[in-house]
Image 1 (spheres, rainbow, N blue to C red):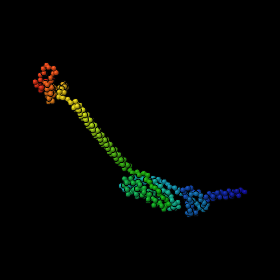
Image 2 (image 1 turned 135 degrees about the vertical axis):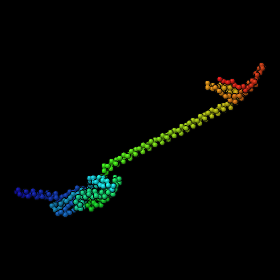
Image 3 (image 1 turned 90 degrees about the vertical axis):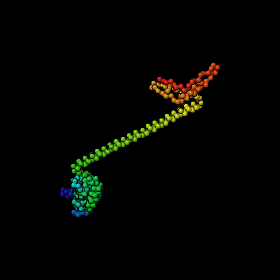
Length: 312
């Protein structure tokens, strides 16, 4: 009995192993290369697949998703004989699992070496300044060469990025000094422009202030003159409406004489000629005066043009 049980157990194990070998589950975005007696037979796609056990074998499982591979810094010589270290990042995707398996031994290593050689050819035709400022141009040229070369390997290069470009230490120091000098220059220019703009605004403000002040003074003087003219006009109209005679005018002249002599500083003053005419009129009025009752007339002044006594 025991040998029969052992044989049954062996048969069950063989069946179980055969089932495992027969049923192959391939994950999504993956592919598997099937070989039969060492020769390529077919490519298994995602899902449940059936293979012949112990005859078909899985050679390689390939991820069909886009892959990102960073490459270490590579020394590259520019056109002006400067050595720069460049880090690159490759974004690629396997489009043909069979070609990626049989056309090249290791497509990762092949892409890396192709990237290095192509990068040296591109950078060798550029100087340092152009290398630092032409990343897009370098990326496009590098991607074009890689995509063309890796097409027969079943690889599609989607993007190539230069992660870092490191010039020599001496060049970096010189560039930092130049950048610092440029920043100081721009700061000095901005400060000078700020001072200039401030002075311009201050001058314009003073100009506007002077203009407004002058306009205000002109308007004030015009209003004062208009007020004085109005006052003179009112006085003149009042006098004209009152119809004053010569006697009243003469009396007003005499009242103004003490006011003219007011002040301690008035040592010398000049009598206008109108005073003489006023005195003449006043003298004539007094000489022609006749009292209402008979008692004799007031004597007429002998000289109405007497000089006014000096005022100390």
